[in-house]
Image 1 (tube, one colour):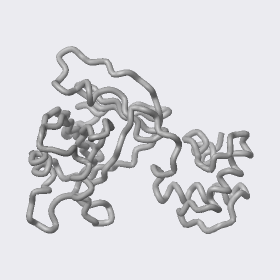
Image 2 (tube, helix red, strand yellow):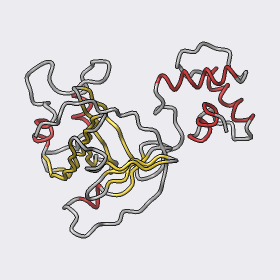
Image 3 (cartoon, rainbow, N blue to C red):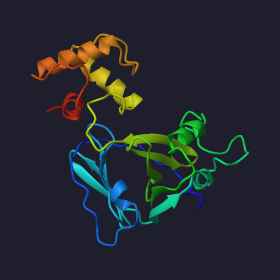
Image 4 (cartoon, rainbow, N blue to C red):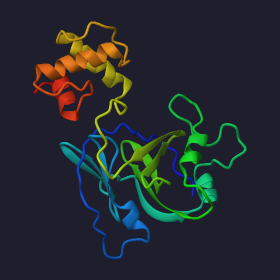
Length: 236
């Protein structure tokens, strides 16, 4: 099966909820290992169920189901081999322009293949696809370290995303370039930052974030939590 080539819109914002895996009656084989809540970062999580995938943020839950994906919806558990995986994403093609590229146009075929578990055995996967105003698909599978990996894909553009059962510590890695510029602009407006608005979080930006955290009575870590980010950008 070849995934529909449509935009995947993987800019997910965030939250961390610790929920247990509750197997459902009649669930597909392999669901228990894949199912339940997985954390992408300290503020975005997904919950994989037998029939839907739910994106969890601090103030919302978005369910990918036929109602929210009126143009097309797929939620398919399937055991795949490495060869199946390569065929699914066109990684077995001799076409130099085949396979997967990131939003800069660079091939990520090697990264994707490296993330797939070693060996030639089958791996339980979930293909989750939604076509609404935005179109996107993700193929989820367990990696060799017991974590969850997703290939988010659409319209020839893809990215690798990793998930954990445990909530990761706060990180700026999930912020987009635009969000980083917004943070620097807000810190500058508050008088904490005097550097360039370049989206690069160097020592100057880190010091400004620490100053902001101190000003609101929080621990000065230099890394914004989701709540601190919202407060900085949108006010209390």
